Image (tube, rainbow, N blue to C red; front, top):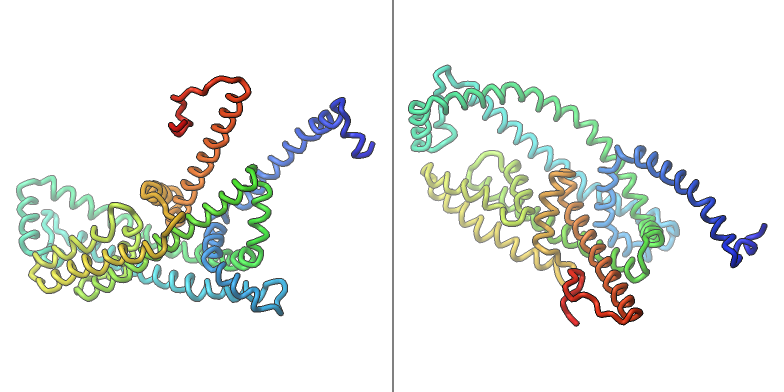
Length: 388
């Protein structure tokens, strides 16, 4: 029977469609589940590949028309991928290595300080705290034996977990190298075939054409706002904070600079959570010049960088609501680690977009039903905008 014979008015086509749809759906769901299991170990590096490819894709778009000798786009894609490796991956890995090394040194120093405590629970605090604070803690230890007991428990915890931390750091080296290889290879193909992939995703997205275009446009705006407006600004604040930390003579500037970068991404927290107490500590320790410098540097340089840079990157429709950033960053960190800083706000914003699309479609459905029945819709419907 030909294809034309299926399109009959007696429902033959419908019966045939229903006949093959259920087996197709079962096979499709089974293959989708197996594909998910195959790609599950690589979801994190693939997500990083998509993010990094998005960052350098404008460079590829500018090189592609110029390099007409590369019809397939391999050469500009390779150059853009090399830019990712040289300008993003290698500096990030090096900075992460230095920050981790300083963090481990700080961990060892603190653990060693705890292990040097004698059985009476007394500690040599002069190297860590100003004299008045050290003396105050000693008096608390003598007056409240529970303080000494808690200090001993902290010492034992650090001694027990130090070896575990070192093993995890060494064991993750090969995993990081493997992930980097996956990221680099995936970036090449995502950059070269990015437009084809986006076009395919648009075709299978169950939305009207204008809504599909708006969906991907919103995703692009959110990524631009998060990557350039949040991440770049936080990176600059972290670098400036580390520079001020180093100039003030404090230890582990790279480690605390990395912490400032993370804090700068979290709304209502910011880098002041680190350089503020550090500046006050220097003042009480007698280093008035360094303390005043660090406080002024934090107020007029580190904090002002946020006010100057963020508006340059986030503008117009690309603005992301502060609540979205707050929920997305904190929830993303808890769910996906550092990758969640990017994926969290993106997921929340796209969900809000789909929710708004549903609201518009549902409202249009209610209005169409009202015209057909002649009934007025309920004004208390929460899906209505409150306007007649």
